Length: 440
View 1 (cartoon, rainbow, N blue to C red):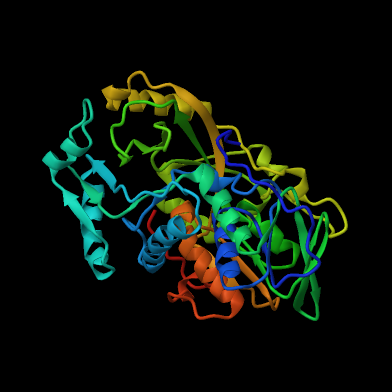
View 2 (view 1 turned 90 degrees about the horizontal axis):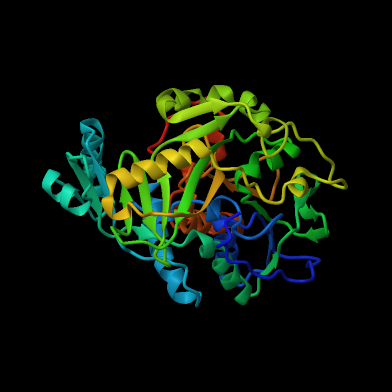
């Protein structure tokens, strides 16, 4: 767990009854709690560990419309507006800045993809410009590399992963929500096909509506109730530097990505690589995920690790009155891959001489929960009245978080969402239709 994670207090008493229970204190769970509380509903946010402690605090922090799949573009526009509004209304600095994002490449195929995406961008009013070779090399000067071109997404920006989810949760608490950390949800209390409550390790909360925003743990929770949710978690590695010279706020190259933090440090990661661990859940959903893995095979490493035997993708069975897997692993905290850390550090120092004295302050691993088409699931669960799912964000969850949470909140409350959310329905992954893998 990042030592920079902003820790917040829990409400002492678990409420006996609320309008909605949200399971999972990541960016989507926290923001959904905020939006529903803002409409006057009584909401309890249940988190097995600490708010924001898993993927929501371990990502790059990018908040972008650039290069989104068309199915996500309406949500990305909504999210950018909501990042602005929450930063204004909550009263805490979420670290959100419209600093622009800069991309550079020496790969003609990638440059052509970015260029062709502009036609789609124009339809959604995305403010983005292509950079020629001269402009790209001026914006992102690199030693020993000559960029063919790039992209400048002018209105996009970044948030602060270590503080965003906790501070949004505090914003929800100010509106009447209660926050319960180190409190695992073991299962749903279901009667005649309808939700009547959530059974936690600290007692049962009566409710008729539940939103599961449990990130990498969502499929396991759904499976406990006989619900199939195809999900795979890929393991990633990143690190944070000590404060150092500013070479740009948010930079993407085909080798590395860098995001400058509020304290003058950088979050650094290798672009487009991940480790897929062989697990029982992976075996169960291998077929629907095959198109994605074939398309991105060069960027994915495969091995067998401890996650085969423990964690969200292991063979987990439990009862609602016994200890659950969520209590056994409060915080999913995989070790960073040391070889990736070395490679990333060497690459950054070679590319950017201004960072030659860069020192690592901390490093971490994380599990990114993905769907077979790399598009999130925001959906009612047809088999259980009152149960809703918001997960599978496929490395897009932080930037899209406010928009996805807003859509989920409206679904739960029976309102019409601000955008058409039909592309996010769970049924698309289960009805046998062809999987259309989205953009990265």
